[in-house]
Image 1 (cartoon, helix red, strand yellow):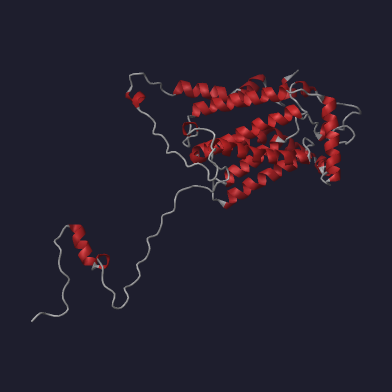
Image 2: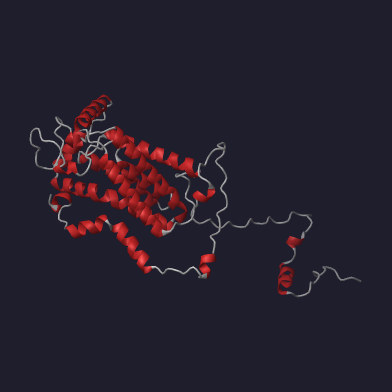
Length: 354
């Protein structure tokens, strides 16, 4: 199969570089960073333990992980790159290894479509028809669907690692738990997307599909019957929540909250997901947050920590008439003399003794 069928306008070299970017970056960093000998004094340095966090109120069993397995600091970058690369490789292998079961996937898709009709949620046909009437919009959505889905979560992870290290581990755990739980749905519930459901007339290309045509040749390489739940919506919602809870900038928050809505429009316009797939993706993020809370006892939606604001000292109220003067209310010149090391002087008397 030619490479242009898998990645349009890409050579074998560029495809290999993009696919193995994590491993190549890890090897390059390991080659550049210096290694230390065993007799180096830095080998004797021990990292200070983070103070033990209080257990969640009313839940003596949680968290499930011990304190040494739930640190809060910034992790090692090489280890993180390896974890992300290996984790995504395992996810891709399991997702593609799930049984396709095309006939069962189409039957499940027809049932989902019937359920959406009962709930008046079957808007896929109207959205896809509107997108197909604008060729430039369809091409833009296809590029968005293929590229932004992978680039945006990596960008948010890098930003959290550099700017909000105290939130990186919590957000990373939620993302990993969400992605891992999605594999259960792909394996147990094969579901055809709207573009592969016969009789609906939905498609992701301007050319009309031939009668009786099935999935494209790419189905042999990727599992196209893994539509439930929508990981596009799950990752987009995770990006929005991670950014909103980690910054106070209103413009950045507004842009982050609009990202899941744009992704929903794209997956419906390209006929790659049902509306109920998006609902399942939202529930998947909730389960990922609960899993992370059970493991570490930390909330994903906790308020943004940021830098503590400097507290203004309380203003002293003036002395009431007849109130006794205390040591803190002494004359300012007397306090300056004490700070400068000069001997204490008694305040001048109002009347000269006779």
